[in-house]
Length: 91
Image (cartoon, rainbow, N blue to C red):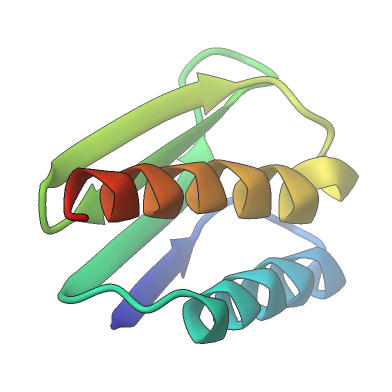
């Protein structure tokens, strides 16, 4: 499994690095087929973020309001939920 990660609008490089590390760690924990793409960008709605996850089964989109410093944990949780639900669908 490969996960391509695109991060936009996160001004703090330490936070962007923490997001990359969380995604990398998840990639090594989970064994799923196919390529995945994760995009994180500021939402058009002020103070919110848009998270897109392209899985082999299709797109999942979420918008949420979180402070920038919470993004690594939020992205990890949302991606884990998506990965686990995809695992259940293909079991």
